[in-house]
Length: 223
Image (cartoon, rainbow, N blue to C red; front, top):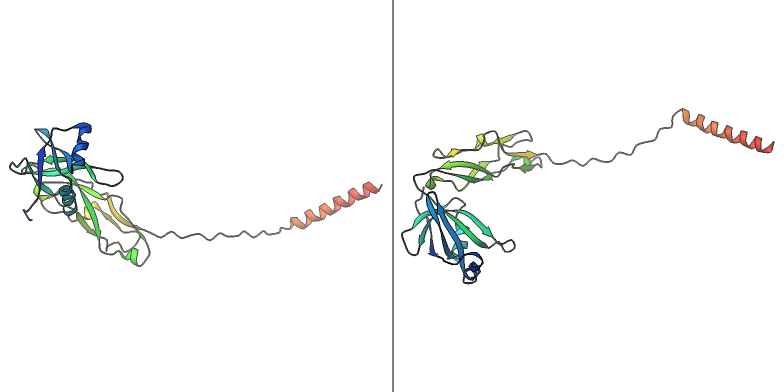
């Protein structure tokens, strides 16, 4: 596994609350660094640099963070608050990790290959879960876990969490019986059936009875 890590420069900040709007106008992104057993630290980072970092790294990638030019320390991007419209980052939480302590994180699942049940039978891929929870040392956290859908040859075949190929230095925490993927059969539209009305034996009798009643009524009127 490559030891090269992305780097990020930060500066300690005094502006907090609504005053951080000044930072954003200046192209700076407010952030907080926190970790186990340490006090959180309010910092700011270059907004453009962070956007570039998000584009070239995965969700569990370690980043070497240097604050005010001091020695860089490894952090994980814990959470990112984004603008609801333009999706630009508004605030970032960075978790300071200890390289000798395992972390529990969610890792996204990525489907690869082609499923015969989709290509040949016209089914639709269903993936009830899109990530699994794993535990590993910070520098062994996978960015994603791929699984092949080529085994999905029909609508009865199912891929479970226990079928995933997990690195030997990673502990899987998600239940192995959870369904990762299956193929749903295409919907068949039912053609409406027009019901044919059958005339029973009683129908003519009812008609004749109606005519008889009409005749009796006419005779009564004439009398």
